Amino acid sequence: MVGFSEEKLASLFQPDVLLTQQYLDNFRRKTPLEPEKALLLAVLDDAVRCFQDNILSQNKKKQMLFEEAEAWLFSEESDGVFSFVSVCALLGFDP
Image (cartoon, rainbow, N blue to C red; front, side, top):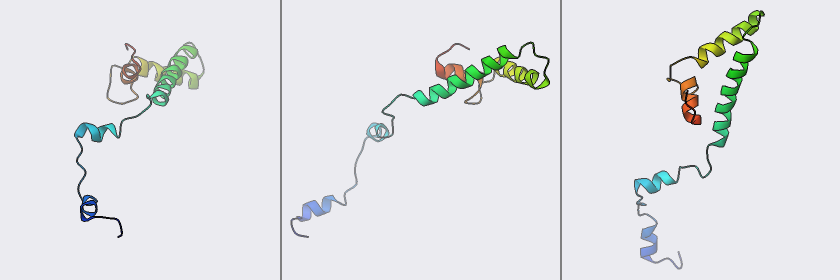
């Protein structure tokens, strides 16, 4: 290896030392979470539309859509990412 000194060659095999913050900075997003927020907003919008559009429906399928939307909208559970409480919290809304 012409042009490599022993010091340069040895430096190739030295471990890189990073602070935890420097390591984590490599994995942080450079852009905001806009696509994820758009998805959460679409889930919320769909539930509200299913609730409003089918509230007085006589059709069994539409009644089922209304009941599912009602159960989701008025649920106090916050276990899942797509629970009503979690969706509102992630979007910055007061459930």
